[in-house]
Amino acid sequence: MPTRHDDTSSPEAKPSLNAVRERIHTRNAGDHDFLQAVDEVFESLEPLVAQEPEWLDDALLDRICEPERQVVFRVPWTDDAGRVHVNRGFRVQFSSALGPYKGGLRFHPTVTLDTVKFLAFEQTFKNALTGLGLGSGKGGSDFDPKGKSDAEIMRFSQSFMTELWRHLGDETDVPAGDIGVGGREIGYLFGQYKRLRNRHESGVLTGKSPSWGGLDVRTQATGYGVAYFAETMMDARGGTLHSATCVVSGSGNVAIYAIEKLQAFGATVVACSDSSGSVIDPDGIDVAWLREVKEVRRERLDAYAAERPAASYRPGEGVWDVACDAAFPCATQNELGEEDARMLVANGVRCVAEGANMPCTPEAVHVFQEAGVAFAPGKAANAGGVAASGLEMRQNAARERWSFERNDEQLRALMADIHHASASAAARLGRPNDLVLGANVAGFERVAEATRALGVV
Ligand code: NDP
Ligand code: 2IT
Image 1 (tube, helix red, strand yellow):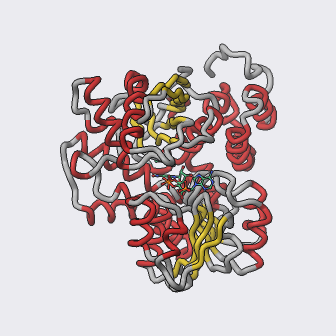
Image 2: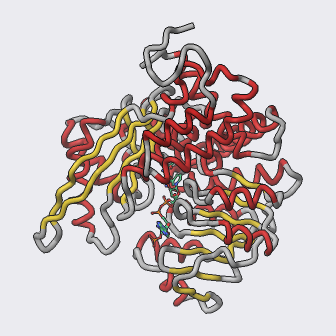
Image 3: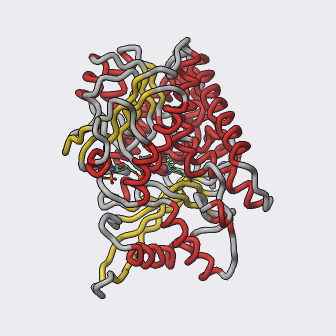
């Protein structure tokens, strides 16, 4: 039995799971999103710890819930008119037990340290589920890319990397994209890193363009992965998405490629949204046109509806009131609440798969579970993005480049593995259909075993 050198656990008696949870709440008071994510994992740990109380030893849970390092920094930049602005940059390096810190960067005006900490915490279990030897982290800034010129985005990205580079490395910390950070931003970030380090260190960022070291399929991977996971989940329950009517929230990277793959399966996606409103297109969303509007022209969704006679645009509205068989929240955290869940259930939804990170509130998840809806939690269902990032890192390290088809096949197999790991853990604990429980426990066991094996570090 290792000696305890901390004051977080008593040598006499095991702390209860609840006592640990309360300690984490006290230490992180006010961090709403982070504590919501912690509580969800702890709810899943209850049946595990009841069977295997040794997980409570040696402040293991306290260590897993405390980031290894948190960096907060100033990002000054100049706009096209010569005015100077200051934003705040973040990188939370949560766990390196399984591999280098790994996780995306988010540029959005709502980003705080709490946001980044919650995302990095979720990433810990998600990355463990991929089985690819990835630690966890997340970063970003409260910078708002909307309405900024390319030159402003470039100057901001360069200033951001001018601080961040010293914390990165292909074996240390490997960022990628997230909300507001796509191929364009990754290009500018990589360019500045390369300049500062004087090394073409391909594996330091993922989500690069395939023309200079990126992985064919990384752009599509999160959205495709969500569709693969949902189809696998439905198949395991004797169903399919092949002729399903679906709704997807968001119209960014994850949403676009989820829509594309669902429609390739034979489903019809009748609605999607952005932060201004939603479109209903009863014949099915035209993905090529959606990409043109959102990725190329960077316009709002009203521009999509303007060119599609059957489509209607609903300013300020979401998509959860639209009747569907399957719903895919792919925009942001806490975008689907209890009332939305009740509306979806009343309208006959059978499958909900989270493309975004923590998009459903805990109350909404309970509504789905009580109604017997097949529910896929984000840390399993959206793991395709980081899994493809893991493949990108491997191919960069080996100086290899696989075909799109080979990467896509590998992605599909990885999503099936993640479903299998999650479903098996859930079955072992007596709740075979509870993938929230299964994903949390399967991810936790992998990261907790490694954390324990590496000693008190
Ligand atoms: P994008 O920036 O490409 O798209 C985000 C979409 O969500 C946009 O349609 C955006 O609307 C909408 N949105 C963002 N924030 C809000 C908000 N506060 N309120 C309403 N709508 C909002 O991001 P991604 O598609 O990459 O990310 C979407 C989600 O998926 C996030 O939760 C992210 O963490 C998660 N995720 C992303 C992965 C990836 O590989 N990119 C991997 C795994 C998870 P608008 O266009 O108006 O801004
Ligand atoms: O939330 C996520 O998993 C991502 N934004 C992708 C992370 C990554 O490193 O590819």
